[in-house]
Length: 366
Image (cartoon, rainbow, N blue to C red; front, top):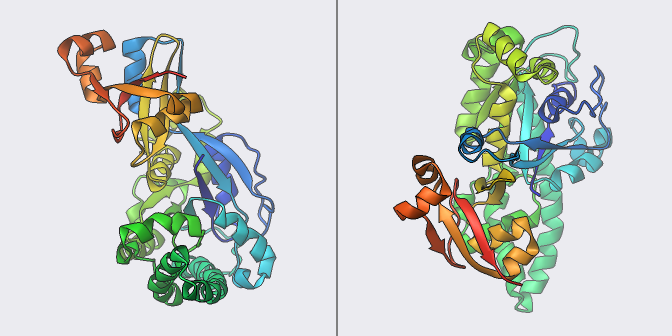
């Protein structure tokens, strides 16, 4: 299962946000640095309106949304790459996640201390980027020396890795967002395996006060963060971690009413979950039957057999065909039976690349 890691400086609202995301309250939240030491891991459900539509059409016994993991990682501080604030331990936790949700404090509150004193989102962002880059620099220096030796012996994998490192090192040295477009398709394919911190996809979660949710663009900190994110081609999601934590304790009707009083249509947590899901490169296919309607997350580019294997390895091993109905065709038809009659159900083979929203029944034999 792919993981998104929540990072940021101490006291920016990471653990409060994690509690709201997972509605678990298993992460301690307090007004002092390094409140979180070991990373907290929680499963989050992906809000998807299509599930409700399929539920109303199929009327199953249960509905199961797609899910993925969020990891709450302790706050980084300046000097983390050199071991400050248990930095090496925290950086190793970031290496293990597939995407980064960088929580940035965009509010003033004298009752909540800031590790660097004054509130300055761009300084905070730079602090994190510098520490990630410095950790990668140290790692790459050692790895490139080893790869140079292997290259002399004709090691093709070493040549490939070395080519990747040589192309992205200038970005890391300048503490810039790494542009993966400079890589070939083959080089880009191995990037996730290299576990570099600076190449992990990242989005910013701008943590604002409750009264700024309705019109966050009036917030000077948000304006500055959005401008920087645009330069880096990274998304920004506006949230109020404290409000989201309060919303997670309410039932859906109460939560909707509360959001309405704030002048907001949807929960920031829902927006953030969907954004993190996209950041991980995930899509969704559905299975729909009397027992359950279920959303299954899969990585973009997965073929039908690989998607079948997400349900059970036997499905992939004995894959024969996939009966596929596009979501829109399914809804227009109103049922699988009518979709078959209309001829919009397709039989797809082993080379079929699954599309977001496919409603599927896998044929297999083991």
